[in-house]
Length: 123
Image (cartoon, rainbow, N blue to C red; front, side, top):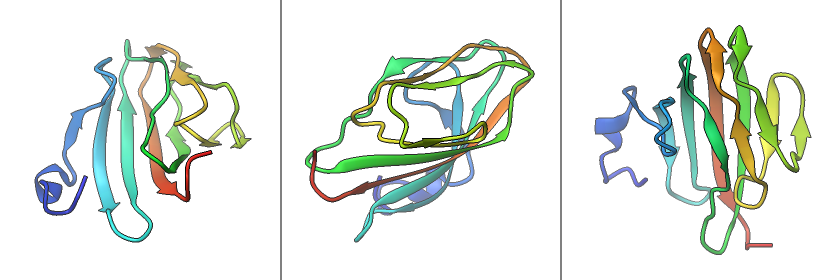
């Protein structure tokens, strides 16, 4: 997303997530220059999930740091084939090469602060 392609129209507004499974995202910040990155809050309500997938990018390496702000009471587990670093609340991974998913939220709402960036050349 570039700043001139609707940045202000998407800033601080809940929008449907890319996987069309019911989770929502709120754009907090984006920078399309030198080190392109985006910063979102993700919201997972009961019944939402994200199936296993990857997020390819052209000719670069894609990184994502997810910080779980609030866990769901039941469900909402992040599953990643090859995380770079992972604790209960911190998840650093390569979404372009490592399949990842979120299990179905059974009870409660899950909130995640998600910072993504692209860097270097593809490997």
